[in-house]
Length: 300
Ligand code: GUN
Image 1 (cartoon, rainbow, N blue to C red):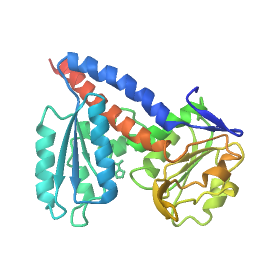
Image 2: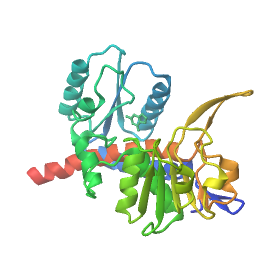
Image 3: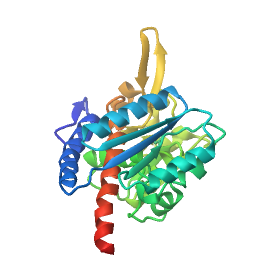
């Protein structure tokens, strides 16, 4: 816990530092795999030119290379047909040099997202979005791929909470990328879990009961200090680009300064959950590459 710092009475959970420790260990593990003749490979597919996706994809490619993995990037125009995209996925599924496949979301509206995600081989589904991996998580099985951002949030929670069993967890937001898988992970660890969404009558009242508050709403400054029970652990998943008189800046979904005053621990934005997402993506890719050795040993 030496990585984290105090902010008044609250611990500021340093996601960037935790991701850095994971990265160091992965550089060593990738090196070991390469000595056995396997270089983990991650293919990233970007359809169209969403500016936020461009930023995320560039960062994923840079960090993939930085740990010694092979990075393969496929950029397709926004008018790419669904069948052309499915053909590319079939090619990547069959390529033994590729251990992980990530299709950056959102996809253009003419493409059915679920058909594309379910075409990815579940063993290579490093985002954990395939219905088989989502289902495994939902029924409490631990042999599937776990979505990167929720996996990163769990690692950050363990920095400040040795056991989650019996704690009351509230997840604000119910997306398939964060909210839903997050709720399932917390449930699997023994939390009592409430998920709030746009139809929830009184989100603040639900939030105030939380020992663990996960905020993934995409709404800058949504969570104020009167939404947070004293001593709660607050994980801010929001990444919002806002314009101020001094230019654009990135803020989370939590009004950080006022909430930090009475939380037990809190993640900053930037430098909290964000760096953990990519670290967990690379961890999933490493796991997928290691699994190919285990599978080979079983069939030979
Ligand atoms: N778009 C926003 N977050 C994610 C993510 O974690 N994975 C993918 N593939 N697309 C995203």
